[in-house]
Amino acid sequence: MKISTVSLKYSDVRSIEENVDVAVQHLEVALAESPDLVLLPELFPYFGIPIEEALPVADSLPGPLTDRLGAIANQHGTWVAGGTFSKDEVGYRNSMFLIDDKGDLIGVYDKMFPTTGELAAGVVPGEEVKVFDTPWGRIGAATCFDMNFDEIMNGLGEHHAKLVLFPSFYHAGAHNIVRAIQNQYYIASAQVTGEGGYQGGFVVDPLGRWLTESSKDRPIVTAEIGLDFVVAHANWNEEQIAAMEGDLGGGVTIVKMDKEENVLITSYLADRSAEDLAKEYGIELKTDYFERARELRCRSPEFRGKPPGSFGDLGPLRNG
Image (cartoon, rainbow, N blue to C red; front, side, top):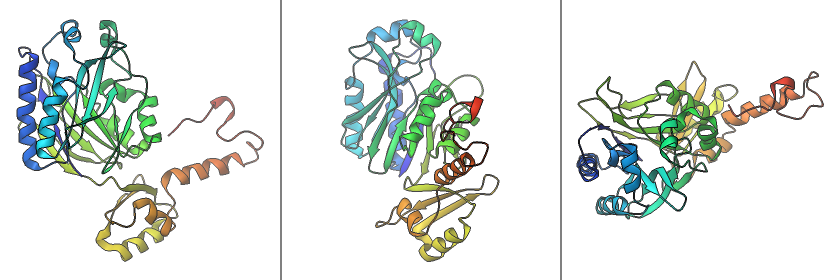
């Protein structure tokens, strides 16, 4: 798939209508790249509006905002995602919406960890990790402060997200690399940029490689990524991976990170997925390898008789 992220500069003077107009202008520029999905930043309709004024005028989802963006998505055959305040029967939320290429709202993720300031203002936390099945693979969502919490970022991996959309005021820096490697997904971010050092949108792959990042002169960036992938560890797999690459040529791409010994295998075959290929060639996936190592450790004399995942005073083993 081809994904574009649009980073927007924060403003102190715009109304909701003006903010949305600016976002739409950038969206239309991004559409020139013919992306499959365009991501807009967190809370882009409310730039420059104090939260105590923003929440009372928040709309439900679906609503006027998703109707307008849905019409553009339908016209161009493009998916659109972004962040806004919303209201439901419980209260006000910091929400990320996902609109498909027919213009329909197919999903909403409510930020599970609003900032302390948002909570004080009355924003209600979301209750669950969300993933959405799409034509390219399973896509998850996290917003801004969420990046700091294992229950969300590891939870997205446990729900088999292949790509995490990350609209944010907060760049999160190296956290993106750690989360992507740890949980084996891409992260695509659209950022809110301020007057300080520019920190714009980006795409990071499951090996922790920074594929693209925006700049002051280029607030829109686009990356082509394949979500039909698996990650293996180099140990015990090198001969099998070489055989697969020799047999299939351009039907797969194989990228290895020598220091981490992680191998990203992406299938572009219509008849066999990356998981199918791993089974066909006897390639042990990274998560399976680590689970096997844990089980073998538990069989050692020191741990014999203790339940798997329990290591004395260390407590239950956590993901990662």
